[in-house]
Image 1 (spheres, one colour):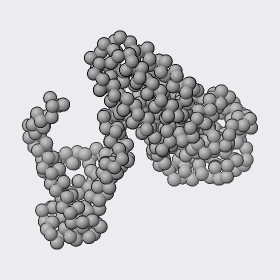
Image 2: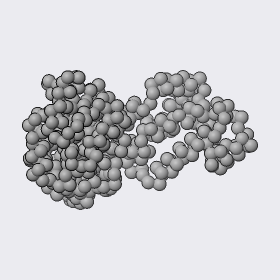
Image 3: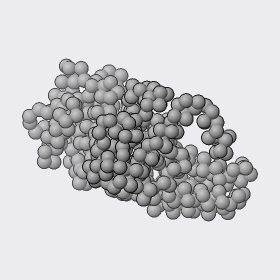
Image 4: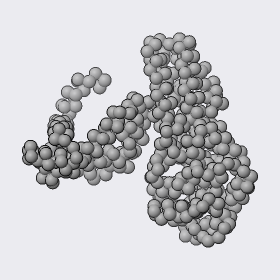
Length: 446
């Protein structure tokens, strides 16, 4: 979503690096470019002004201009202020009631993704060891309550689904069931409208008084531009939201407006939907998001993704195979499969420091190459995967035909595998010396 903003900001800092020494004029020119980049990304103009008013005195101070790396000093200031803009270094957490059940009201306009976000938050809570109960009070949108019930059944979430037509009665009975059975969190999917009206706000105020929620989360569609800011501000003023949930962060919109909502309302962004699947939902971490936008990467996020995907036993088995030089094409395919489970390749690459600018054709080609390689390996017999040396000319033709590729593609894969196996053998046995030899040829590792 923030690709355009990221490109612009990284380009500005590349220009600063090219100046050698910085003058106040250089910094002012960079700040003007940053202002334009933020406005073009749909960041609210008041938020941009406040942001630059905080950055300017620090960026034009003598300690920056006299620094040996002034461009890095300016980058650090911009980074710190952007993190502050989005909520600070410490990621905001979901507040739990001292006496269960914790009640969370999910609010927002119709079409913002409240119902799906309620299910996503429920799955996230289950992973954290909680026992949530979900309930929909939306009696106005056709099949809204059925949608939540279906999502609950599909993802093993308990949904309170009584008969009737009274949102207040739904909440009362959901709270009674939660206390009786032992659910520690009740997620209330409230009704929305296409616009803010008094009837909607009155109903939300009644539900708030009835349920005494610990959290009132406003679900903001990151694709809606400045309307997201206006709506979030009005919900906060009239209901008192405690946090934001951003949806559709994987979309193509500019995204700045949604990020502005945190500053305008004073409510931190607590969660973000990063895809359509229920598990594509995560606590919002300002420092990591800013790192990705500025091309500084998100190594911790990458490690967490890997830990969630890669099986510990499989990793240990693979390490043993490497030591014994038993790495096979089956293992090669499995590693590609695991990598693809981490998400789109461009998202994974963007989490590596300095790699945010690697996009487009190269990434698309990499995705296609992995799919082609998997198809080629799938067309091999078990023996061929274990012993690639038996693959002669006729076998290569058969494999190419079975995978819908060419003999040249099969040859290329076998060559890549041989090179990978050779490299892994070098690191598996006598790897310390091999690593030293590699480092000796790469000045950045000395």
